[in-house]
Every structure is written in structure tokens, then in C-alpha cells.
Amino acid sequence: MSAGAVVVAGVLDATFREPPLRLHPVRAVGRGLDAAARAVPSEPPRRAMLSGGLAWATGAAAAVLAGAAVERAVRDAPPGRRAVVLGVVLWPLLSGRLLLDEVGAVDRALTVDVATGRVAVARLVSRDVESLSESEVRQAALESLAENLSDSVVAPLFWYVCGGLPAAALYRFTNTADAMWGYRTRRWRYAGLVAARADDLLNLVPSRLTGVALAGPQVPWSRLRREARRTPSPNAGWPMAGLALRLDVRLAKPGVYTLHPDGRPPVAADTEAALCLVGRAVWVSIGAAACVVGLRRRRRG
Image 1: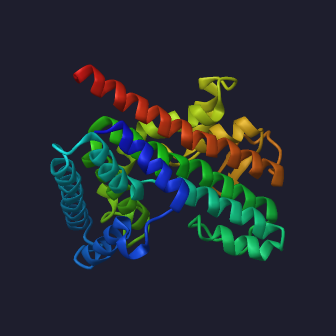
Image 2 (image 1 turned 90 degrees about the vertical axis):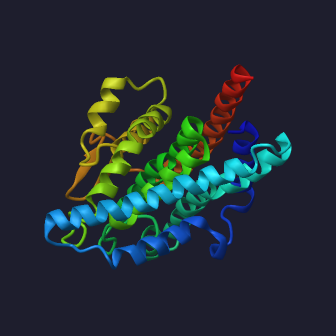
């Protein structure tokens, strides 16, 4: 591991946002999952679960081995070169700048009309957006902003700190697999079960760290936990509840959950405040990860 690699990855993310699509490893993972899905049946339940689990495990092992191979390749390189190489490889596993840009685009779209806002927020969420009001569009964007701060920044950095590139690559593969297979539909209810549960496990700590960071010291843990438990997901509610309580706004997915029901409906100023808060959280996460890695290497040295 390299503290410099975390800084390099963060600077690349902030400057260039994403690597070119043709070179993006997450896109390659998506293509691989699409190909594997053709061999995974939806029924009977036991066969679907075993086949989906085997497909997930094969991809997860490949991600870990790829990360380990990169680390091995630069193990004896000069520190500066090692930091650059590891940072370039870590970069696509983060999506802080893209997240901020996409949520900001929703807010700008809402200044045109609600229909344009619905089109913009549809790029961030999987729910049906056709009947969403302006307030509901803004709520969906803020929920995505909070949840993806954990998924796209905090969790990859957390796992890099814990286990270097192999662990970070494992997390990003698992999170992508969950995004593609982790649905409670007839097709994926059993076939995507292992991928979904693996994602739940890997996000257990990062989601709570993100929730605490967004809520700030003024929000008691008991209140944050109570609000987070309103969602069916064991993890997604934590960052969303943290943001809702910090801004004193209500965030809801119609027919599924309502976080901080006593809060007010969010307005444009709340989106601006949320973007500033999350933008700072991205850099705090990068700085904290770099410091922890640096301290660990110093102790070992």
C-alpha cells in the first residue's frame, strides 16, 4: 500500500473525473457480468443461487488476483513510481467527482422544468421517476448523493486501507455485481442473492462511517440509528439518514421509506449545502485514508 497512491487517485478523480470508457475497468467488469449472467439460471432457487454464487466468486477471485498482480509488479519500484502506478489503478475505483457532477446536474435541470429534472435523476436512481414531483426529484438526488458517497468513495478507500488494491478491487467488483444482479425480481431473487449479501457485508462498516460523518457530532448515534433502520437496506439508510438529519430535511422513497419525517421538504439551497458537505467529505476521506496508510507503513518500517 502507498499513501501517495491515495492522493494520486484523489487528484486524478477530481481533475479528470473518469478514465476513458474503453479503458475503464468497471465497464469491463460490467461486460463480464453480463456475459456470466447468460449462464446463470433464474430457477430452480437452489441451482440459481449456487450458479450465481459461483459466478460471483469467480469474478471476485479475478478482481483480487488482478489487484495483487499490480502490487507485485511495483513492489520493488521507487516509492514515487509505485505511488503513481498504484494511484492510477486505484483511481477508477473512486467516483467522487462524477457523483458531485451528476447530482449538480439534477439541480440545474430542475431550474428548467420538472420533466428535465426527472430525466437527469433517472441516471442516478433505479426507481420509476415519471410521476415524481420537483421535491421528490430533489429528494432522490440527495439520497443518491449520500448513499454513493459511501459506495463510491468511503468504501473503496476503507478497503484499500484494510487490504490494499486486492481488497479495493474486490469491493468495486462486488458493488458492481450488486448493482447489476442484486434485485428482488424473479430473474435475480435467487441468482443474485450471493452478490447482494456480499455487498451488504462489505458495506457494513463504510456505510456507518459515512452516516456518522454526514450527520456530524450534533446528531446522537441513537437518533441516526433509528432513522437508518427505516429503510429495507441494512446499509443505505445510514448515509441517507445522516444527510437528512444534518440538513433537517425529509428524504423519502414513495411507498418504501421516509427518513426524518419531521423535516422540511428540501429546496435548491439544501442541494447546494449537501454538495458542499459531500465535497468536503470526499477530501477528508482521501486525507484520512492517506494518513492511516502512511502511519501503518511507518510503524512497519
